[in-house]
Length: 305
Ligand code: SF4
Ligand code: SF4
Ligand code: SF4
Image (cartoon, rainbow, N blue to C red):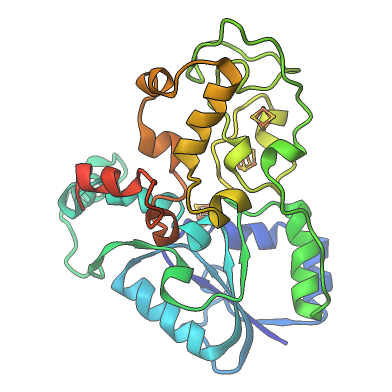
């Protein structure tokens, strides 16, 4: 069994998540050989005859696109690993800025850049937008998470390598969260720095924008467990994906309206920074953008590519 791990527009965190499996990885390596993984080994090109290719990262430039097409041709099974690969992830947020502003910031605006401030000319050309892997090639399996969580990778990777079926929860983060709904008569929207939530009651009920209800689980609700609202890093819940009339933004507004008996329009007035609040991990996904009710198209148009 030959395994490859390809990196596109990624932070390499998903590959590191595989390495972080520690002893569990040794069991997998007893049955499979990693033949290509640019982050951890010096092999320049993916070989032919790959059995499973894990692809991490979004597709943001021509090089990403070429690498993706090549690995798809050379692998029997392609797995989109991590939320960047599944839904565009953080790289998709680049669509909120134009190319010039991005390059100025990256090569001149960050303190650690070369002092001459020269923008290199050999950077692969940007595509007109970011894409998720499944927007461009056939994907056989999706493993979401930024990065995917160890407790699930430990189960999923051996099952993939052995070809054995595996039944895992497909529910939302809320279904994994043990907080209870408290009183919310005086509900008001709060930003994360505006107070310290209590540890017993639902964060949304306390006014914090917790996206647990619209986010795919398999993280053990780790953020609410640490008293931090879910910001959606596992990508959309299956409800959101399957139903054309459900989108992250509209379902959250509806949920708050049901919870508080306030009109949706009133709730929307208090909402700030829709892109970073509701779509930080999905703005680069065509599937999510193509939902007629999604705000993504407006956000991209507003800021322009
Ligand atoms: S999903 Fe998260 S951890 Fe994985 S490559 Fe993208 S940003 Fe990095
Ligand atoms: S909204 Fe957040 S805090 Fe409330 S139940 Fe869902 S995951 Fe837990
Ligand atoms: S709670 Fe939400 S943001 Fe936190 S790890 Fe889970 S899906 Fe990601």
